[in-house]
Image (cartoon, rainbow, N blue to C red; front, side, top):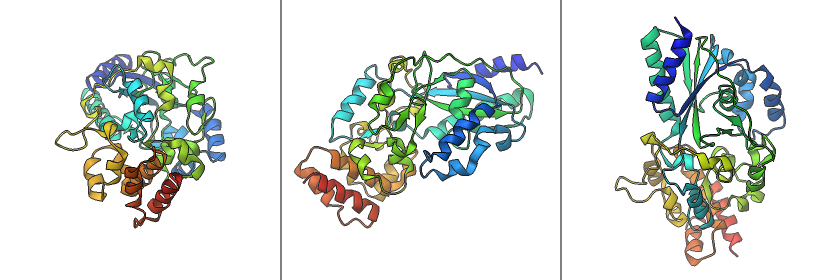
Length: 357
């Protein structure tokens, strides 16, 4: 088997699968282990206990998938197909009566989309060379995706801890294919953040505590998605109208003027109902707060939003309504759930009502 020729073929096949870029990395991450351990020891993973349970398996691919010697890293762009998407996002953030959802979550669940296309790539490889050892991932297991993608030449790790590519910014998903094939590896990309600190300055909750260091416990994405319990009161006001995730550090990043528009149809923003009426990016908070469990399940089916469940959805929208401009409509909407069966929802509704007094 000519592994160099196979590596070139895999690049062609990956593009046919819809991936925007591809690179191959060695899986020796021993020099990344101290930083991972220090971050975990500082408790910056918050309640994401699984990160601590996995320990160093995250930095040791061959322990997770025996026989792994390379990581084939791919990216899939998701920036909205709108030349003014950054300005549009800022306008939504400024419209306190509207809901802001992270741009990546406006389409179908990226976990499934990227994994499915990676499986197609793996099937094409096995069709060409026969059975081989592999496993596909997309933000779904203890894998250091950004570290591996950096080593594979897909970009550099920015000060906001996200991967940044000089020709496509940071608005892309990463997928990982662990293989037992000693494919030629790619060279890393040079870093180009320089003295820029816009991402640190813009973070609404100051979660980027130092360049290249994120305290997840303060991150809006963690607070609105990963955190299952009560959002700390001192962080509710800075959340604003962000009900699922946050993009501020990407919206302000100068490299995202080169962001590539979404090409995979399933990752395009989708409507909230089969009739095609507006998507989440045009939704009013009051309307979203009226959703019952079946409304939530039906309208978020197939999206990444579905994973937080109806209770946390109401928690997040209650906080956003507490940060909205005061109006009789907002007060009435909040009061309608003052006696909600969920203690979590009631707590955040009470806070929101008090914030309007």
